[in-house]
Image (cartoon, rainbow, N blue to C red; front, top):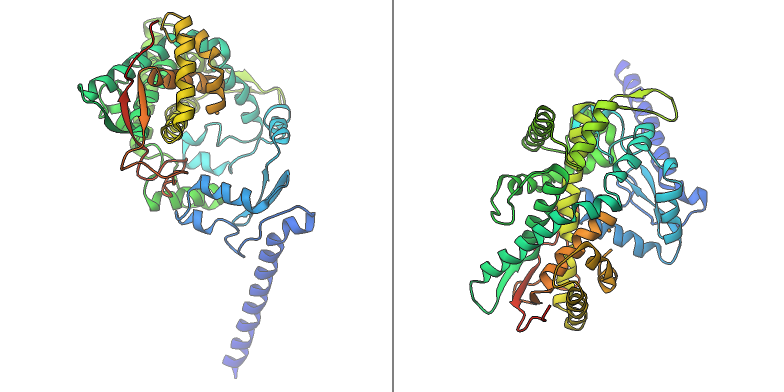
Length: 431
């Protein structure tokens, strides 16, 4: 008799627990419906992200799908598992959030993630007050004045890029290149020199240490992607599972490079107006929170985390923007001809030199690609360097249009690379 009572009690408790769980999940699922916000209907537990979570759909493709499913609305809701998310589609609202009201949208991940991964203290992982204090300071490090000041370094990398492609052609009429690989080397050198003051040598040697490490920063395998996605969508679970965003190899490399660079500069009284110097000053002086008036200590981990993020975005996102732009131009010869004409005309007015002022005059280039001010200068300079010497055409390994994304990557990365045929221009304008 006792076992029947025990069984009944167990079944009752289980039924109540299941009912409560179902009610909670249903409440989460109907979050946007209760608020009267347009939304994309999702699954009970996974929301709208099951395919992305299991690395079957790239992140950019996911957001594009959600945007398309929402239709013609200024904003709309969706779910990342149990988390309600709001997608802003109206440009004016987006600008207001990112500029005027950015201080009200400060929280990112759970604070537990920083305890597990000290290098998670970058801008994407900061919360509340610290993020509001660091964001304008980091933005100041990439101001218009810094763009103009560092342009000589960008131009040096442009010269190396031109020379590398020219030598790789070896007198042949054309050659196939993977744009992403080629331009990642270019942007690695640019961010290494302008932010760290370090010669990475990635253009001349694609197997250089910096280029090898840069290829390891973001998750590649399906297992790594699932772990990163879980940590992103369920940060507390990620903290419990001790998921780290950067491998120990990457963390140790940047920790050593940054700390050795700062120590060398301090010991030899070297001053360079770059991101390393900016972070050194911030570390020495600290700063006071405007909200709490408390002194905020800038630790080594905080410094390394900002530099690692700057390096990652500096080489990855700018190289992707350049790659997709040239891919589009390769299959749109009319647009490429227009870009060639603008580059030729502007450079002819500047003695054939790619200068900061020349880049500002390339207004058609602004229609092709636009991401922040510093990144835009780098992208336009690299594109001008290549378009002034070469033509780009499709090849048998070229991606379709639009190019498909690699689902096993965090950022938008083309599946199988972006291959084009590069041809020396049959004539070059007299400068």
